[in-house]
Image 1 (cartoon, rainbow, N blue to C red):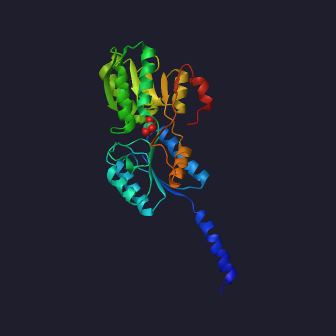
Image 2 (cartoon, rainbow, N blue to C red; image 1 turned 120 degrees about the horizontal axis):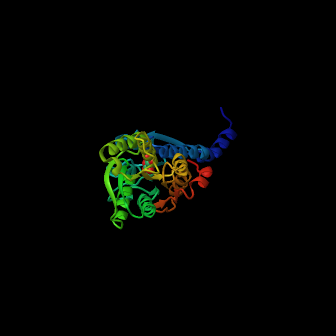
Length: 310
Ligand code: GZL
């Protein structure tokens, strides 16, 4: 029979053992469609490992139904918090109501949602996509003297970044009547999508195309490849402006193959876990926390390159 002393010591240690239980966080990631996404997933995974967090990572492979299924699974597992990078803006209320009933806080990262009930999530952490679209248009107007025919490569249909980057760019162009979007189509944030859509645009519009506005760098780099295969010089014969500022794009800007990329920083794993800790400790957090984004063009890309982290 165990001595009373052993039982007493075990009882004393119990709270310490319980307190040391690792935080369990479910993360419903959109997929692996771009270099940005890969860097974002890496930031979330490596920071969780560093902090001893048990991260249950789900890759939805670009399908909202997979994300919703993952969230339901996290609820069933009774995780401490749920993080979602919502692939599209709508269709979230039912599963978020289930998380709320289970008293599991939901943190939206990267992309926001459209809901009438903002109590369904604790907060949003990501970039201001509208500002990114505005910065891209503002740079283009200055670079082209407010003149030119634009083809637009849109991101994933229905996603917050595609919706906001498109709206912001169109709103800004209202001030520049000689900057016109002559065609627009989704390449789904993928390099192959950007290349295929650009090949179609070149066939349809030929030399009328003077500018490409891509909602992300992967599509811009795909478009640059299509432009080269058509015997033209990307960055010279056709101006290319995009968003994300992944290393490869910043290098392409330094090399003159792209002309401008607006940063959309994906490395916010630390910020997400700091926020989760505050929420679980009952502290209030801002409903929206925007990451800081800057812009790279021929004036600063080469000097920025050595310190780029994604
Ligand atoms: C933006 C993010 C977008 C990136 C793309 O925060 O949602 O999705 O701009 C990524 O590269 O695929």
